[in-house]
Image (cartoon, rainbow, N blue to C red; front, side, top):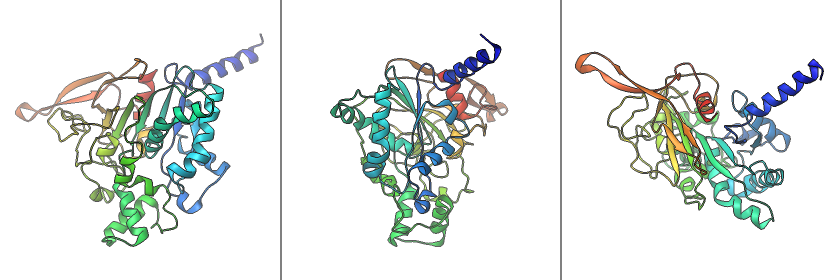
Length: 349
């Protein structure tokens, strides 16, 4: 074997090893893309947008993606024209034959819940084998709805009390003010609507949650979000809480900054939703990027996949402050120099 052929094979094998978490292929489901509401992408544009969405970290570590346009609705064209063809392809190719992990961000969390609730029946009815999904990794999940979507729909329809601050918050998030003709998946993201979409799936796939409490909007959007938020999604949604509330953590004993203290965390979670990592310094988009923004703590340091395999994070507790003013904090190892996505990927491998 020549040296060049050997290096080529080594490169291919290295690439294949990277495109997995543990031994499981990775499938990506991206989130809401505000610019789609005006540009209304179709065909290869949707795929190009999906590729760019994940470019910083997860794209080159994935085996497949489900790309979808934000100007459409989940139960309509997003499913029929984008999700369903990809599910058939993955079933025929055996992508998840030995198990696979789906990685979602933002609204991808809600799209994924609809997939989990329906994919087995859809594929069986088509004479195909259902996907063996062992877990999802949900970053900044919007499956519990987004209050900003309610506000955006109100602005677009001219209903409700609308003032300059509200318009500013919506425009910061979307890049412009929406109109009634271009709200698309925002309809699905309204809090009550989102929480009713496939709310109780029969599948027991674990939804492992990774949440932030930073903001890219100088706190302007946070004024319209209950409790802690990441600038777009409130913690009741990103944590996977069973009910809407003004929560300041995904845990009742660990704060977003890692402080070990009593917090106003959720008392219950949506079916099979398990919060894991949290960080005060990560905004909505930061959680899937490849840069460390702040130390990361854990609401739960371990969780099982559907087949019993385990995702485990190593943490340590440390005392900060002096004398009676000191407090204890929980920190994930190496999180001061490792991005949240990289922490998850490394732990899974």
